[in-house]
Amino acid sequence: MPRPKGSADLIEDRRLRALALWATGLSLNEVGRRIHCAPSSVLRWLRAQRRGGPDALRVRFSPGRPLKLGSSQRRRLVKLLLQGPQAHGYRTQLWTTARIAEVIRREFGVDYHRDHVGRLMHRLNWSPQKPETRAVERDDEAIERWKRKDWPRVKKTLRGWAPT
Image 1 (cartoon, rainbow, N blue to C red):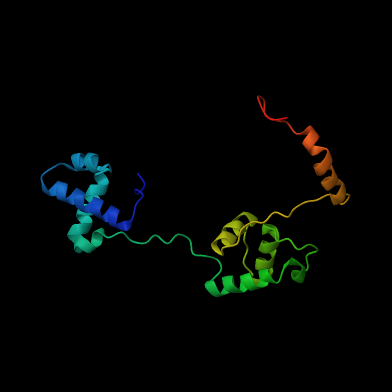
Image 2 (image 1 turned 90 degrees about the horizontal axis):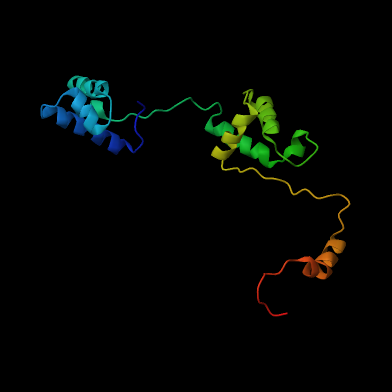
């Protein structure tokens, strides 16, 4: 069973409740059933408390994999990205995750998969932007004229009674 979700205080409270139930004379299986955990977890908490006291029941931080770029490198990356893609040799003013991964590889010597670059950018409070695509042949005046003249004629009206 994975560790239940909740704050460290809730998890520690759960462990203390389990030990209190054990102290009343209940079996490991019954304690596990009442607090919704495996009996082996209750036994592990009992052994930990015997070895290390109440501090042994504290929830420890689970750090996960360390970040590939340190905080100073991430700050430098933001400065590099703010210069824009064209300053780094790209033809358009659009950052893609593949381009950012190339810049990271070139500047820091660290390989990032383009899918993970998106997570890194979210951590840096950047969000994906989609450029507005417009046809080269677009005629804004003709569009406005159509909206004023033809759209009211084509647009559906509500069924039922309405002023004409």
